[in-house]
Amino acid sequence: MTITTSKWELKLEVEDFLAREAHLLDERRFEEWLDLFAEDAEYIMPLKEYVQGDVAPAGHPIIHDDKDMLRVRLAKDATGYSHSELPASMTCHLLSNIVVDEVPDCTDVLVRSMFTVRQSRKLRDEAWWAGRRIDRLRRFDGSWQIARREILLDATILPRGLSIFF
Image 1: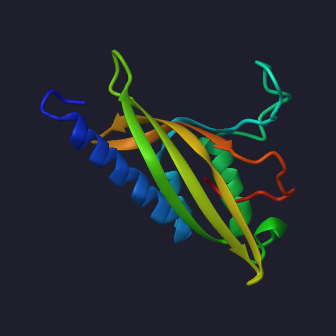
Image 2: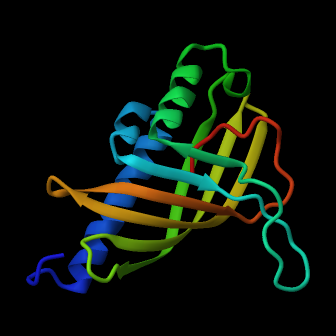
C-alpha cells in the first residue's frame, strides 16, 4: 500500500477485486479466474469437525491445491467428462462482512470475508453453501493476486463430488 492510499480506498479496491472474481466464477470464465492467482498460490479447504474443546482438526484438508492443481481441475471439467459437473453447475456467489488488514512489513493484505454460494444443477438439484474465507492478496504488476485462500465451510457433511470453487 502506498502512503497516499487510505484504508478506505484500500477496502474499496479489495472489495471490487473480490466482486469481479465472483462474477468470473458465476459466468464460468475460469481461465480468467485462474489468472487472478499468484503462481505460488495455495487453495485450501480444511476438514472441519465440531467437537467440544480445543482439538486439532482431524485428518487432511478436503482440498489443498496449488495453481497447477487448479489448472488440472479446470482442464478436467473442460473435457466434458467430469461426472460431478455434467451438466455444469450454475452458481451465484455472494460476499459480505469483508475486513481488510495490512500485513506488517509487506504489501500483502489479509482479507476475511463471509460467503454464500448457491449451486444449481440439472434444473432440480440445489445446494446452498455458507462459510468464511481467509485470503492473502498480493500486489503484482499493479493489481491484486490471490496468494492464499482458505475456505472454511459451515458444513460437516459434504457431497462426494464437490466441484465448484469458492
